[in-house]
Image 1 (cartoon, rainbow, N blue to C red):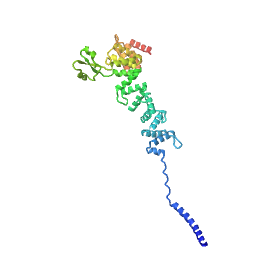
Image 2 (image 1 turned 30 degrees about the horizontal axis):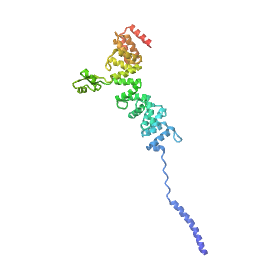
Image 3 (image 1 turned 120 degrees about the vertical axis):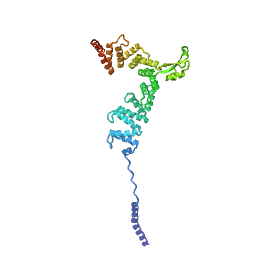
Length: 374
């Protein structure tokens, strides 16, 4: 029995170290866990094309941080890349940066371009800021149909500046197709509200409308029943084809009466260009019936308001004796001199040509009048 116990104890002593060694060996033979891959840096993700990372990295370079030195030039490059890839906040950040001079000298024109980009990407505040810069004259272009649509939404709130701007855009085709009908409709809104510039622009457009043809009855007694009197045809041939045997073709300037009305409204309120336009129209007898008295009246109004072209028109008339009993070189020289002083080169040339026909007394008198006027 004692022998059995001894053998058992001996086996336990021998097997203990053996089992421990086996466990250590098993652990040694197990494969180690794979190391987790390193997370890519913000700059790496930006370089790989992640748009949000491009914006975040640009902002980091713009503001600087513990691990990144402030670098506005590089920040601009990353923000431009993000904005070009459709990141609206990046575009707005660029716009604000150009306004505040964060990328060098402040540049409101460039700021407007980026406000437009941010607005085009859906930023409503950016649209409002772009329109503000446009209406203040810091950018010459509305940017195209999207900008026009935003401006129309603004004009719908009865903003007169926006209404006038829309009239000019449709009149001259700033980034969109010219549409005189829409231009006139916008000008008309502001004109009825009493805006002088709108009255002038509307009147000028109406007065410049091309001639058209209408049909009148050959028998004047039937004219009171003419229900198509205000139907206009673009060509004489088109009107003649519709005339039949009892009507005749009559040429007509559709915008003449309304154009004269709006220009007169503006001129009476002191708009110099409106007075000039009326004076030239009456003088030339093309857009309005020839009327020397009205021509002189409105050209004088424009000249007194400082319009150099009106001064030259009056000088030309005085030199030829139009509207006067005889040519008046003194009056002509005075008006030429005033127009030339206002920067009108052709008036200066006409004045120098007139001097050759004047005697010293006339020239001295002319200079004295100009000195008194000044």
